[in-house]
Image 1 (cartoon, rainbow, N blue to C red):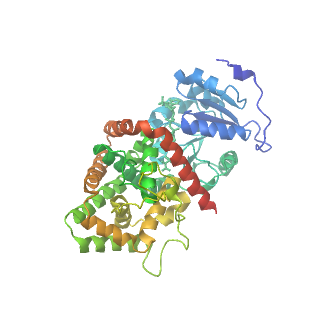
Image 2: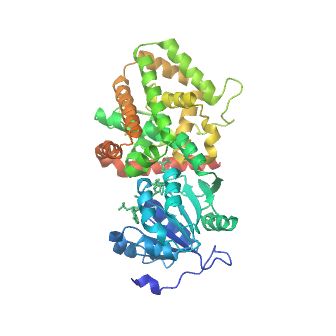
Image 3: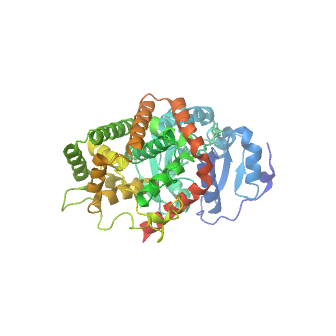
Length: 456
Ligand SMILES: NC(=O)C1=CN([C@@H]2O[C@H](COP(=O)(O)OP(=O)(O)OC[C@H]3O[C@@H](n4cnc5c(N)ncnc54)[C@H](OP(=O)(O)O)[C@@H]3O)[C@@H](O)[C@H]2O)C=CC1
Ligand SMILES: O=C(O)C(=O)Cc1ccc(O)cc1
């Protein structure tokens, strides 16, 4: 069982306070998030013991051989029995099985938590399989593994813990530089369902719609301009990820089903209104949703300054310029933005005010809310959108496929069909795969620019 690393002394502790020198952070699951935590916590001086599945042991040993604060072990039993604070960073759908396996090996008096995106199954697993002497403090970094955690929300859930244990967890995680947000597991699931579930449903549906019409949206002149850049970049960003992250938070979060179902209904009903040319009804419905979500004229819920700076998004295009463009500025083609109208309609139907959730939001959500806000607060833009929705057939086929896709995801989620969800995702992921490399870089740059403008 001994490794080259066993013999190495740990690095000088930098951010570790007196009295916690022997504190060991255990990480079970060394995927994208587990590795991110391992790297950042170890850099701050914390001693890490980590494992993934046993077959990845040798690769992990090689990968972390240069880091003297990280010790790779063969399995979760070894991590659990030796660590002061154990973080499970595995697939949400696997948490029950993995905690059942390693939970009974937890060190006496240790603290245990999880990083999964949905807390209901995680907490149930802890309650069922952990010994009674173990404290439970869970967490959730509300961003992906390639985003700098500094300033991003980090949810902390003191589910069953002494003040002392909770303070220890905060001390450890403070090195991420995130904003600590204190919630219960149920509050966490409700808020993340409101923010993440519908956002993801929109981008997953866009990907399926473009795929169904076998088009790369950045080719050709229809999807050009700031809002279209966001759609394309974020859609690709999601399809470039692992399927289980999005399936888990949609299917396993009991609160998310309602949101995803309503998003499908909102999409369908708005599409019918457009298709049938019911101009007045469409306008009345969208403006009523605007009032509910963004506030009435004179008492808006948005801030004095828009979430997104004008022109910011135009910089992040995957498309190439047309040869006939002289000044490099191709005028965007007017779109009815069904996805954005449906999202706001969905929030309105469910009484969700997205600004109430900013403290617990992901960069992707803030960006997409910023785009919705831009559409609804820029004079003339919303009316233009509604006009296009009624008069213009350019986007009808894509909108039809978008509607079908939104309903397909909703059905899949409501029936808890993990395998079908995976297949639906994988087939579209393969379609877009050739463009992931460049696209993810552009998407990262876009998110970074938006985050930097948040701080200005
Ligand atoms: N990616 C993201 O943007 C974010 C993800 N999260 C959440 O964090 C968790 C981890 O996500 P992420 O790191 O992206 O996913 P990954 O798939 O990259 O990592 C999960 C890892 O856990 C491993 N694992 C599964 N079973 C065991 C086991 N019995 N023992 C040890 N390791 C095991 C998996 O192996 P294998 O692949 O072989 O199953 C995999 O390497 C998820 O619950 C996700 O919802 C939270 C915030 C952001
Ligand atoms: O920002 C998003 O919505 C992402 O897609 C990244 C992400 C995925 C899962 C999480 O639990 C938190 C963040």
